[in-house]
Length: 62
Image 1 (cartoon, rainbow, N blue to C red):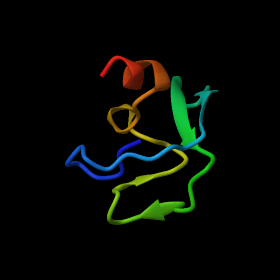
Image 2 (image 1 turned 135 degrees about the horizontal axis):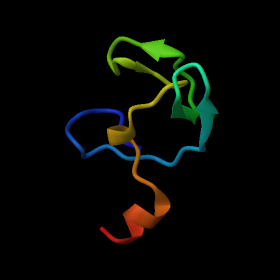
Image 3 (image 1 turned 180 degrees about the vertical axis):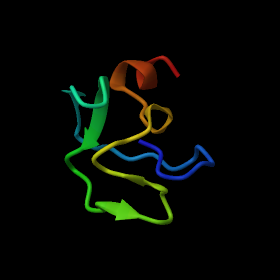
């Protein structure tokens, strides 16, 4: 997971996904996070932008 926009800061996190019926979409949740919402990130650990997540299979192909 990359917390910044530079693309050079990665760390392991447990990320889950659930279907939000109200939003009609899958939502990524960082259950290993500690920041409910921090201004410096611009998003909540309970609704991660897809662009911020690199899955294990994606990381192995880099």
